[in-house]
Image (cartoon, rainbow, N blue to C red; front, top):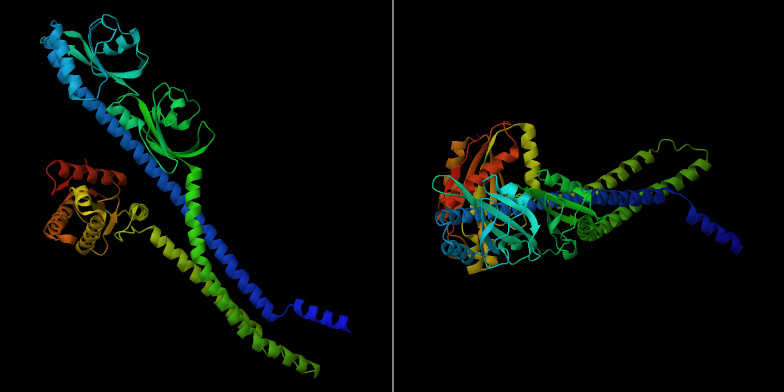
Length: 526
C-alpha cells in the first residue's frame, strides 16, 4: 500500500503537464536568450577593445616616430649653424674647438662632437677622446662623401658605446667641400634621444621598441634584448619598408600581440608599440563580469515574473483539463476548447518581453560605450561609425577641430575637478551652437571635433568664428575665462580620403596655435 502511494507521488512529480512545460520553456527561453546576448556582447566588446588598441598603438608609434624625426631635424639645424662657423675658421684649431664646446654646452643632444677633413681624418674632437688623427671607416666615409646631411648607421665607438652620428658637410665661401662636422649620440646615454625612445612606463603590459635597418633592436624594455637581430617578424619587415599601420601578430617570443608601427624616415628605423592580447582579454573579462553582475538581478526578476504568470496561465487550463477529463468519461467531446493557441500566444509574449528587456540592457551598454562619460558627447567609437555612414551616403561636410588654449594651466591652477567642469561647459556651448544634424564628439583631453554635413568651408569658418567668440565671452565655472583655437577643413563628397580632412583640420588647428591661439584657421583640399 505504501509502495503504491510512493509510486503515485513519483508519477505525479515526473508527469509532464502544461504548467511544467510552460515554466520549463519560459525558463529555457530567458536563460538561453541571456546567454546568447552575453556572448554577443562579449564578442562585440572584444572586437572593439582590439580595434581601439590597434588604433592607440598605431597613434603612439606614429607620434613617437614624428617626435624622433623632429629631434633629428633639430639636431641637423644645430649642426648647420656650427658648420658655418667651423668652415670659416677651419684652419684655426682653437676656434674650431671653441665652437664645439659652445654646441656641447648649450644642449644635451650630443655626447660628443668631431670635425673631420674631406678625406675622413678627424681633426678636432670634444670632449677630448683618443680618436684625434684617426680616420672614419670606408663605409661611413662613403655616406658623408655625398656632401649632404646624413645620419650614420648605428656603430660601436672606440669607447665601446653603441651610437649614431648625425653629420653636416663643411663648405668654404667658394663652395669647396672641406669635410664635415658630426655629433655623437650614445643610444643608451643620458640624451634627449634616449629619453624619447628608451623610457616608457605602462601598467597594462604594453611596451615599445625600436629597430634599425639591419633588424637590430636599439631600444627595448628588456636590456638583454638590445642589440639582438630579429627575423621572421612581419611587423618589423613592414615598418623597415617605410610602412605605418597596425595588426595582430605572434611575436618572436610566441606571444599574441596587438601592434602599431611607424617608420622614422630620416634614419630608416622603425618604432613598434604593442600590447599583449592576453592583457586585453583580462581587461575585457573584468568589464564583462560587470555586465553579467548587472544583468543577473534583472534576469531573476524576469524569471520570477515568468513563473508567476506561467502559474496563473496554467492553473485555469489545468482545471479545464480536469473538467474535460470528467466530460470525456461521459463521452462528451471537448474539441471546442482552443486552450493551446491561447497558451502559445501568452508564452510568446513573455519570451518577447524578456528578450526586449535584455536587449534594452545591451542597448544601454552600447550607448554608454559610444558616449564620452564626462561631456556626454560622442566618443571615438561613435565617430568611426559616423564616418563610415558618411562615406556610404557620400554627403560632403566641413569639420571643426577645437582645442582649449592653455588648458593644462587650468588643471594646474584650479584642479582637475574644475577642469572637468570647464570641459562640460564647453560641450554645452558646442551643442547649443550646433545644428540638429551636426555631429559633436570629444577625441582627447581638451580636443573636440564638430562635423557639419552640407556646409561649405566659408560657412564653416563663420560657424567657427561664432563659436570661438561665444566661448571667449562666456564665463566658465569658478569665473574662469578660456579661449579656443579652431582648425577648419572640408570633405567634398568622396573626392579625397576621409581621414585626410581630419588631418587637414588638425594642421589648421596647429596653424591657429602657432599664430597666437584664440583663432580660427582653415585649409582647403589641394
